Image (cartoon, rainbow, N blue to C red; front, side):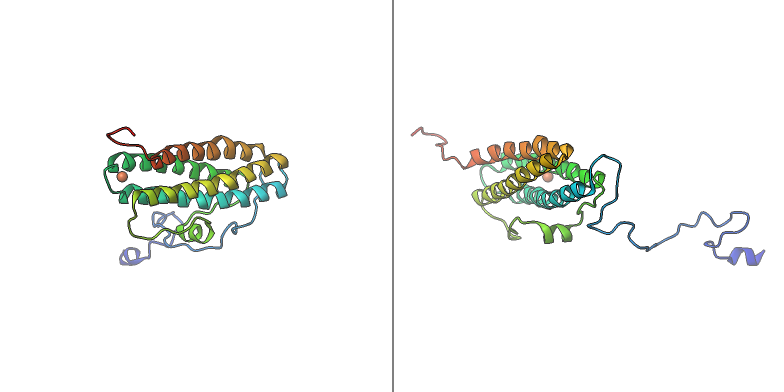
Length: 202
Ligand SMILES: [Fe+2]
């Protein structure tokens, strides 16, 4: 009886005892290294999938950076427009978060591997790194506008390449979701940089 009590619970007996022990800290080889393609039966050639995965990963890294830039500004905004910008920045953050998920899942369904972790995003993005400290509203907005424009330019090129290669799904994602969302957010931001009188008309 004493021997049974001291038996390690990771050992599974013939009677199945010990199966309740969780197997902790497993470490194995990656099942798919980054940059490789798993073939899925979606009727597209490997080269087409590979090209779309590569361009989408760049757009993903930039979109994740823009998403995080919105949250930074949501927290750090200051001044008499604090409340409206605090809310607007968070709204745009949410929209960009949805785009991140759509782009990442498109990469996976093409058989690729989407960039996920902040370290990898930081190494990949082309958006300039802002300082850790707080900046004035016009500086915050111009940083966002520059990031939007970078994403819009690369997305239009990528959308055309995807359409030419026959990858209509990627083209649709880029045009219907990424480009349209970014264009709309540029409008909402840019109108804040128009100098109009608050009380007296010119
Ligand atoms: Fe918040």
